[in-house]
Length: 114
Image (cartoon, rainbow, N blue to C red; front, side, top):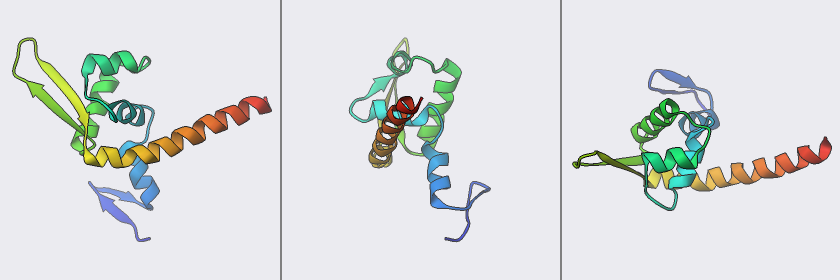
């Protein structure tokens, strides 16, 4: 596969490109939670216990910019913002599910090995 240039960054393979979009500690858990329902910021924060406010905000912005989630702002006081998954985000769910299941199996295997 030829190299791929995107946003001034060079990617050497499609796995690297995909993982740059949805990889890391928090993007997949955010997408996983939004796969079946729309959630507000506070709900996501409460449901992902170890994420900081700064990290949740930055990850939500990145996922929105990449087209994986949609952010809807309601013109009310206090402001109300909801996050939902897009078609692009839904396409990532089967991939996340496979990685999640593999991680669970690997954790179980490695616990047995100890």
